[in-house]
Image: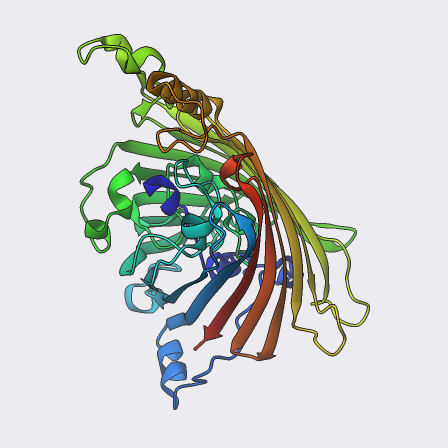
Length: 450
């Protein structure tokens, strides 16, 4: 539960936008990298232009996500789950004060509230680890956290960007897919399923490099702290490395291109860590004595692979910012230590489907999740030791396999600063358990830009 909460993300869209907006010839609007509209507070009586003139730029948003169990799931009692958050992402230009080329201070602060997850309360059997979420921004409790605070600068005529500080992986890595769906596994890329690092509002120490070999091809690398304690409340604003288990070495290739004159973005990445790992399958450890060395299966490293693409497929004849895009992304982990063996998601998005609503979106996506056989075998071993075989016995440890989840949404933008996104989710085998009834979940996400 702790590990999966650390993968919750929201607001990847704006972070990715900052990266992809640098190339004026590559328009990623239909891919989901859409600039925020004019905020509710406008220029704030002239304060915002003054801040911008002095190099301070920010995006301040409010988000809430509602989920209601229409039918099915583990618990059929109806419940409307509600969570919300405020998030500010900002940059301060330091070049004007220091003379260092493109020197920038980058920050992110997130305030989350309510932590009311429909998944854990109604949809899924709590006796197995969660593998998806009905509200991708749920998790880590009601708390205000530092998402990141980093220093960045460029070298070699802006081809190399260097970043260092208390950072989050979304600043540099796995930026090809926006976080628009409310179902977690359809939101953003799959690198967080490594369970090694966190999305969005969790920081650890690190440094990263992104080098543009060509305007289209970027190589990314870094070294980041691998700290399972980073999700703890005590770490919300901490500079400490207490709890660190080792380091993560991520490598990624990102390719921005045009196919038939339509923009697309592709990536392939891997992570390696030297942190000590525990095998999910204890085997005979449950029969072994406390001093039996064979009772502890540990090893000193693990890995994770991820990749995908996001490609515009059609363009409206009269508006380059309207059209259809499609994408697939996936993650593949070491099932000895990662209870999610692999996950893949396929999505379609259309911006401006109706002439009268050129800034509205419609999206549909499907994900497939396969659970580690080491984790499943360990559940079976627990049942054998307990002498239970009845799923409804409180002592029984359910044995997961695979799950298929889907979502359809429509996003309205009635004014520039407001987005309303109703949708419906379908959960096949929630928690990857065949014993849990398939579920239908209604959703409503609201975003207000200030």
